[in-house]
Image (cartoon, rainbow, N blue to C red; front, side, top):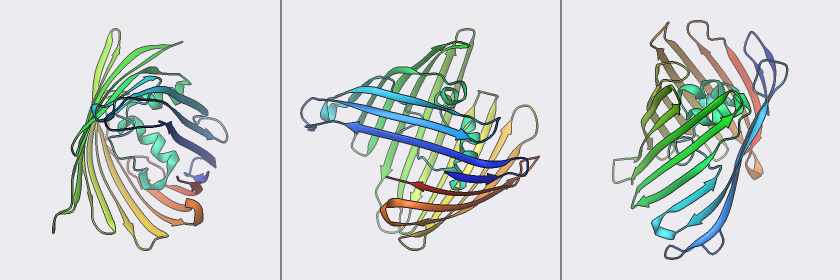
Length: 282
């Protein structure tokens, strides 16, 4: 829950992003049956913001080391599981506004249009390499489209002076009848003792042809106190490029409750944004 002020508007914003998984008696060498339930919701005071919630229920068929199949309404692999989930400058409202340029288009369309996607997903791993593929479909009033995605993540363990590295990427194909397009993501994240740094490039053809380059970092000063910084340049094929940068401070209380103070600004009409929030992470 946050209070925001972006020069043109101020008010409250709430965001909940939750995944619960139940998979009893899981074994690397045997079959297990379970289920998962995801929820993604956003609510902004006043008018003009996204005010909706979407559930992602799925039945899980786990085959141990051979992988897992999720049937029902699983999240896209481009949205969850392979691409690091870093909130831009710890500002959930701004992060949601930027998500069409950095995330799968499925969750944003679901929230913005109050659609309910369904589909199937497969996840597996080969050593330190994880691979996933997914199919999501939205068939609702005003939209009839298929979304195919493939994603990977490979972790290089820390060795001597070399930090722990996570290389990741994804591709998403959107088939909406006469309209077809693809989105791409590629990046790397490095973890030091108390510092995490990430760099990624995203190409999006929806809602417009754009390339986004993002650099972000997080410094952990104590167990409770950390600071984050993010900068992103969004360069569309039509119009001028936009650069957004932000800094934030987080203080962690007991039971993983936290307080964030965030400041962001940008070029070409991007308003200054102040965000104060409290939340719970588990």
